Length: 135
Image (cartoon, rainbow, N blue to C red; front, side, top):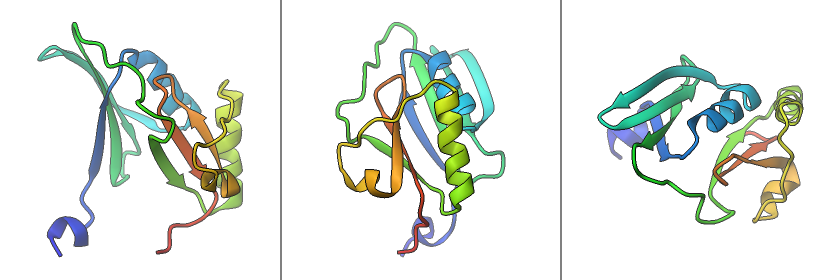
């Protein structure tokens, strides 16, 4: 196995958007992620990076000046957060709803069996799954 598979690197998931502020509201205020960085007009891009200060992952959303990113290509483009603690899962779900986001039916019914799915302003979906990843 490679070092990437055996060591815990920091994972950044990057994605384009047409509306950074709407995504900031969804991921920071709804999901509860922290705004780690924000940049404007950096080589023609504006962007935000959200996550946890010491988490092994973060999400970067960028807007390229003069380009349209569009919406998610399908309803099955997912980001899944496994939350095994029932109270933490309920808190995350309730915060999303209190922030104005309504759960959506998952394209794959598996995710509805133990979780709840929300759609971000770009049409990408986030699943809050009430189980641990133990495979």
